[in-house]
Structure formats: structure tokens, C-alpha cells
Image (tube, rainbow over all chains, first blue to last red; front, side):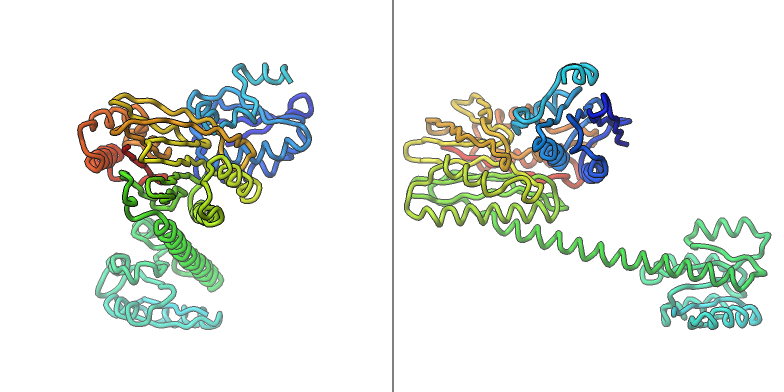
Length: 113
Length: 372
């Protein structure tokens, strides 16, 4: 369900193959999945929100964990293509102060890095 | 070693099967017909049944459905014995609840392989069921502990009503009201990330922390800014990989002054003279070192109402998967302006339950109503 690609050798891009609600068990399996990837060694991680329909608090906790694994090395978590609802949720939690939220495409986000 | 019931009218077949199974150190009970098979199943409680489909009294399929209709016996795996050409009855037996079949004539290796595979599978299912039951009991116990922490009724001097219904699988909503002085109250509503025992335990810890904090300051001033900072440094995200959102408030009913700090929680609604104001939050979630001490100070008038809720309320869906939403909440509240606070709560609860339908709530649902 989750896809991981490495662009420009060190930029990790996470995307979803089909529309998914990241809740409950999906949040848990997302966590298990990304823990098997070496995200901490990426210079940046981009999550393509294109297929994320909804995300619950466990999903948010997973995003924070990714962010936490990146920041010690000065890397950051970037989110693109988010739905207005998810953007609003991140703003309510004030996580938009920590994560980099981009309005354009994945390619544009990569270029900006 | 397992106990196996062999049902076949042909004595030679029973003797052969018995010798195969006994050699593999299983215990064998024999039945020559359907009625004695059902009796033996009830009295001897075998671990597995080998059932011939051609019996003198009942059809083997009738015996099979007799077993499957009995709630005590339906878990016993049944392997049917059939003639090799009888494809239709094999299919019928499998769809009626048999777990496998053995065609006659059979080889002893095949009998043992099929029997032992089914016994192993059955034991796994049994232990899984026991594990799930005990987990469910733990979750229910965690839920009861959590529910015991929220107040039973509002303290004297504060007009407050609430809806608090933890989801069937236990979530992490918690709230409390503490009387700080004759006309001064501390109120909070918090929502832990995640569900289940993790979230319930964190909510209990947060509740405990707040009681300790209150004990520590004694008769001193309850400083909201200091409280939020301590909460933030005590519940670091990395400690449990969980976070929570919270609204904490100090209400002075005499001066009608409200101090409010919202850390990542859905924005409360304030109804002043029948008009809504959404109190946008100024702080982020707890545990990420984002708390800056932004306290909102509001001077209210008599009759003003404050509504706090967790996202479980607005994100609950109807049968079509549409969320309840903030707009609907506002519309209902608008229609309740002339009602008492308790009637408003009942009306909200009714409308919410009707919208959600009979399905279980995915998340905890909490809503607090306070009137000044």
C-alpha cells in the first residue's frame, strides 16, 4: 500500500498507491512499514498526501515520529498535496510550525530542497 | 494426544481408523450411527470428529448440521469420510461446516496428516480466542478505570453539563472540574492520541498529574501559564510516542472572567448574546515543546455559553460516511438558545445519536457545556 522512492540519492519520498484512510490498524501498519525503511539517513523526507483521505491521531503520532528521527541531523519532514481537512488538522495542532507544508507538486518540493 | 470420535457404520473402517490413530497416540471413541455420534459428542467432548456421510439412521450431513447448531459442539472440527467419486457431497459437507474430507479408500499417512493438521489449527484458534477474550477484558477494565475518574456531577456554583461516552474500544478523552475557591473553578478537557489501553493509561496519568499539580500549589494561585508549561515538559512525545491536546480554563463565576488555554484542541464555541464566536486555538499539541503560554482572557456576561468538544463529536459519521461536522453542531446549539442547559444537552445528545445511527462510535465523544 505504501511506496518509498529515493530521489536525488538522498530524498525519501513516501506515497500511497491508492486512496487510504490512515486510521487504527492502517496507522499501525504505516508505522511498522516506515520503521523498516532507513528514513533517518535521508536528507529530507517528502510525504505525498495525494491519496491520504483522512488521518487519525495515531497517524499524526507516526508523522511526529518520522519528524523526530530526522531533526537531530538537521533534516526535515515535508508534506505535499494535502487535502484542506488535513491541512486544517495540522494547523490546529500547530504542527505546521514543525513540518514543512508545500502547496505545489512533489517535483516542485524536490526542486526547492 | 487428542480425543477423536470416529463415526462409521462399517466396523472394519472404524477398526482400521482406530489402529491408525492409536498408533499416533490419540484416544479413539467409536460410534456406529448418527444418534450415538451426537450423544458421544455431547458426553465425551472429542477434540475432532471423523464422520462418515452414509449412516444407517441419519444422513451424515444431518449429523453435521446437528453439531454446528449446538453452541457447545459447533467448535469441534469435523472431517468427513466420503467415497472418492462423491464430489457433490464433499462440497456440501465443506459448505456445511466440515473442515476437510478424506476419500475412501484412504492411506494411513493421509489420515494422520489431515487429522493432525486440523488439530493443530483448532488449537491455535482456541488459544487465539482465549488471548482475544483476555485482551478485551483488559480493555474494558481500563475503560472502567478511566470512566471512574470523570466527575459524577458539576460542583455547586458552576452551571455545567456534559456528554461523555468513551468508544467501545476505549479511547483517551478525559475531563475534570476542580473547585479552586468559592467562585473559582478549574476545568479541563483532554484528548489522548490513539485508542485502547495506551490512550486510557495516558489519560489516567494526565489526570493524576493534574491532581498532583493542584496539591503542590496548595492555597497558592493556580497559574494557567505555569500549569501548561509543566504539562508540556512532563509529557514529552518521545516518552510514550503519544501526544494529547487539551483545553484548560479558569472560570471566575463572580466576575464572569474566563482564562483559557487551548493546546491543539478543536476550537471551543462561545455564544454571546445568541451569537457564535469560535475561539481559535493559539497553542500546539502537548509534548513537542511548543507551549508559549498564550492565554486568552475573556470577560463574559450572564447567560453566555461556552461549548468545548473533542473531535470524536464532530468527526462521527452517519451511515453514508459523512461527518457530523462543526456547522451542524452550531445549528443545533443555535436552536437551543431558549432551552435550559440540561435540555440543550439532551437535545444535542438525541440529535447526535440519531445522526450516528446504531453503529458503535469509533472514537470517544465528549462535549462540555458551561453557562455563565
